[in-house]
Image (cartoon, rainbow, N blue to C red):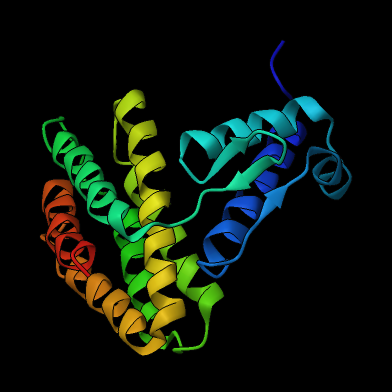
Length: 210
């Protein structure tokens, strides 16, 4: 039996709220997610909460620990290069697809994101996250293969955690890195999705080596 629009909206809201909380947490913060508390917080039963936690586990944002429950996966410096390499590989696989042209609306979204990035203050972590979230929505909508789209999303949020940890460690440098990324994307060849993804690969290759 399919879920109704209201249920799907509540599920999406809870997933995004938890993902945001994880990505904005300080790298050394020990976060444990308790099903009972989450059901009360989001007004949902245990089944959809477990589905959300399973999705976050697929994105390698949380893990199940014996005797503890569901905990946020710690960011280990030795894993950063691996995560960047996986994400790059997925982006390169996307380039093998027959990508659609960007619509006028999508081009407008890029310009809007560029404007937001230029206004983002060095202490505005929420806006930093929002910009990356909007980039995700734009890019995932351009991937026609559902399996690859899902893999892209999973690796994307892992990269965002690293980027937000950079922000916690050195806000001015991380804010400038995001502005540089968005400026680079905003000069892509009009309506050319391939050029857009190539520019993401070029920019994230540099950021992944931080």
